[in-house]
Image 1 (tube, rainbow, N blue to C red):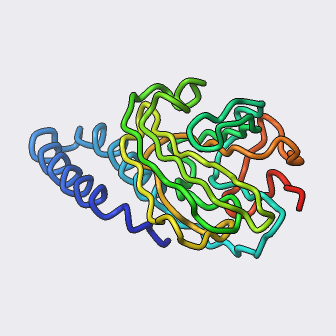
Image 2: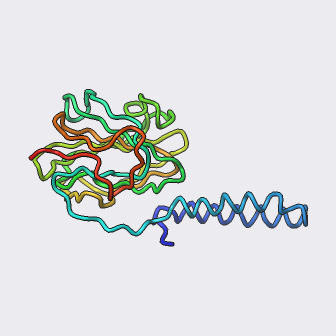
Image 3: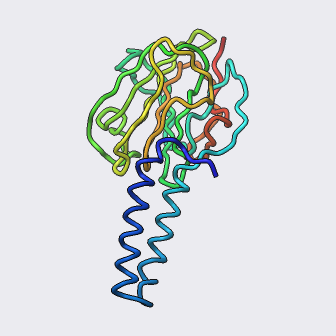
Length: 217
């Protein structure tokens, strides 16, 4: 199983902690140490599972809006996007549990025209106000269909680190990685009002693969 590059520090700390606790449990508890070691081993394995990098065939897209993350669609509504667009848009929000792949991908192809990091609170990621009050990064891409699409990584109650690798002027390719969020979070995508939405609330998405909307040329 391939692991994401963001796993290195976490896995080193987890490995040292596991080794220390395992040694102490075996030394002091002997046979009873299994009561501690078995659940600890499960948690240790879940850390590796969290940082997995799935092998996915990413296709080229022009009009399609691709799911930027693995997760569950929790919101589809018309909102006012005040940070960059300064106009109404359709917001599609996808919630990621700690068991989902947490690679963040471009939802559309085009050119990166805006990025900004915002420090903030750590409300639970499905809270509606987390989009504007939590720690977050906002990105915007001018798509190949000449639309401005905004998308936002949002840290949740558990997630405390957002990573993004692109800069303004970079080429965005739908479905390809641009960042990572650690341990549970949310992604919001803001689309033009005339966008054809192809997902519904409750849908499970696979980042880089599933088409969630289609924009008009």
